[in-house]
Amino acid sequence: MRIAAIADDYTGASDLANTWAKNGLVTIQTIGIPEGLDVSGADALVVSFKIRSVPAAEAVAAAIRAWDWLTARGFDHVMYKVCSTFDSTDEGNIGPVTDALRARAGAALTLVTPAFPETKRTLYKGHLFVEDVLLSESPLRNHPLNPMHDPNLVRVLGRQTPDPVGLLDLATIRAGDAAVAARLDALAGEGVRSVIADAVAESDLDVLGRAAGAMPVSTGASGLGLGLARASGLGGGAVPASAPTTGPSAIVVGSCSARSLEQVAAAEAVMPVLRLDPDRLVAGEAIAEALDWARERIKAGPVLVAASGEPDAVRAVQARHGREAASAAIEAGLASLAEGLVAAGVTRLVVAGGETSGAVVDRLGIAGFRLGPEIAPGVPVLVTLGHEPPLAMALKSGNFGGADFFAQALTRL
Ligand SMILES: Nc1ncnc2c1ncn2[C@@H]1O[C@H](COP(=O)(O)OP(=O)(O)OP(=O)(O)O)[C@@H](O)[C@H]1O
Ligand SMILES: O=C(O)[C@@H](O)C(=O)CO
Image 1 (cartoon, rainbow, N blue to C red):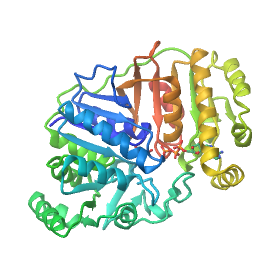
Image 2 (image 1 turned 30 degrees about the vertical axis):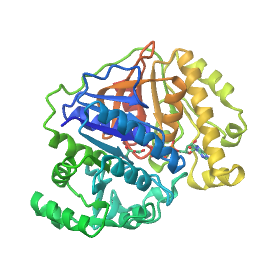
Image 3 (image 1 turned 180 degrees about the vertical axis):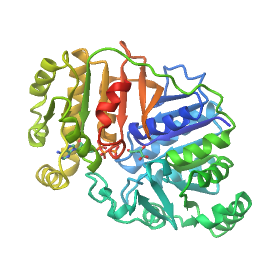
């Protein structure tokens, strides 16, 4: 079984590609549909889009294009990679894309699970836990683009799709493959189309990987990716070797997650850190100065530039400028900064935040990545394909990595 994924953001794509690569699948992450890139040697392909927070029709159109491209090239199963914290709004895009891919594939059901036990995202009776608390009590309740206030994913997904949503509970999963198949048949008979699946341990994901792999499409995060990798029968490839690049390094942070804020604070002890004024960024100012500041320092060692703010400050910026306008302007500012840093010779670049990573990677015109070793769960080293000179990068999801992630990442790039 050759497996592929359509990822709703670039950091999430690298997280899944990391799971596949470290399980021995020869994996390539592409940016969009890889027209000009040779991907023939890959067991597994992750097509990355930036469609988590765009209008649903746009996300559906991109996903269908990728589905057609992937199935025409012989991929047997396509997973829609969403965030392990189910980042979405009542308008989508998880429900609309899941429905559209199921319809395109002619499938009866889609298994949906964001569980990723390695990073402590677990699902029980349809309720998503982030570390030790429900999703709605986790820092995701303050997410700048999609605050998550409901931990019951049957309900959350139910608001994103006209079709009934069912639950495959842990007891059934633990009863094994036959019990799961019988339950899925029963749910399909009741008219259910999307099935939220519990998972607490990796052994649960083995069962779900086999069940999902028997269908043409699924929706999930790296945990389901792990189950699919194990069910694929592939996995003979070498685990990615270290590929350190020399040259100046920099870190660009647009994520406002609690974990990223902690990591920026920790970096202050070990490297120069510049915190940008978000109002000036929205006004299109601040980047030229930030670039001058960074250029003066990168020959001596790494630098970090952050736009990030605490939840109250972010809400205030959004109230002043509008949520979408503020996000788009800050992302564009950070993308210009990254472009300037690379033009100034930076070859090792860490970006924090999914939307921010999307803006930066697009601005740099990167076609795809080959996978390097894991830095932290969900965050691999990425080496650019088709970019001269090659860049070693890490795209860090907001909530991933330990407090010292940034310093740690630079030792691996
Ligand atoms: N000080 C700020 N005030 C308001 N918005 C900000 C500020 N700093 C960054 N942003 C915006 O907040 C958003 C953060 O989203 P992003 O996806 O980059 O990070 P994240 O949600 O933590 O990451 P992930 O999706 O990987 O978990 C971006 O659109 C960014 O431009
Ligand atoms: O699944 C996750 O948590 C990450 O890969 C992600 O998508 C965060 O943007």
